[in-house]
Figure 1: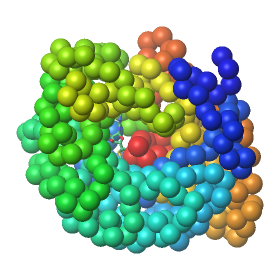
Figure 2: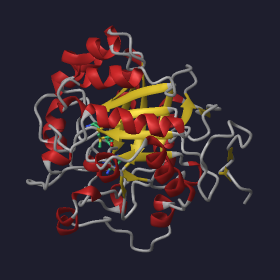
Figure 3: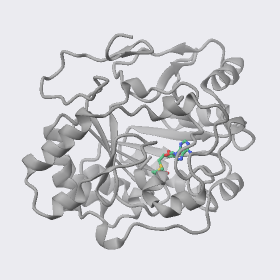
Figure 4: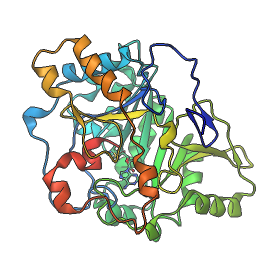
Length: 357
Ligand code: SAM
């Protein structure tokens, strides 16, 4: 395979010379910043347990520390930043962090992923603070199903959050993790809902990441199956050519021009074009959702490292990156959840809600 060329996706190798590339020629371009490991939902595919080991309070980065690290990342070529968690809106005064990041001219795309519960309250302030885009997780349109799936009876709050985000002028995406026998009968309803709310839905294959201790291959509804269901209902579906070669979702178009995406991270991983890394709320930097270990940036940050020193640590770590976690998982016979509860309790950094989805 040609360097940088995967599944027909090709990096623009002639892009800015400052871009830091890993061993597979993947650029350091996109950073997900988890601002808290806490969440106000208990989704079955992410936080199914009754109790959790949380990151120590004193280890959580301040907004100033996050903004400084992000500045170092953008000086190395990162241009896309997504605030996530846990539930990012549980972090007090998130618009203040958005404002600080919006002032970073290296960021061309500042986004947030939220479960929407608190969005109605904060949407307008986030917009004013310069946040560019919002993705709301919406796994079901049925309140009673949300009770079962996420142990919450606040479905109406999510819908209010979606309405408020639109009213505030945000471009909106909806994330739906599709699970067999749980919500796979709602694909068409979700497409219709998204269309009615001027949003684009992205169906995500159920992944065997961190907290998904109940994962099994049988529960995964693959991209192929999703397309079969939707084309049976709508007719011929065509792929949408995208300019963003590293985007996790492949986009598709229905005959009536409605677009939607599928993130086929389980059945057809896109590791070879993955330019994403993740900063946890305590300043641990992960270069793959499946990585065993992260790089501690908090310690050097708090012990007086200069921007140049932090930059050198980040650049040299990325240059050595070889991770292809989802592809490696795909090759496993008898694939089972990545961790069981004991393993997650031993190191909460293994949790998806700590790494940031
Ligand atoms: N709390 C926010 C939310 O719910 O959107 C942000 C964090 S959440 C971990 C980010 C995304 O990760 C969500 O869209 C969620 O659906 C996705 N996610 C979590 N666990 C997953 C799994 N096992 N498979 C696929 N997607 C998962």
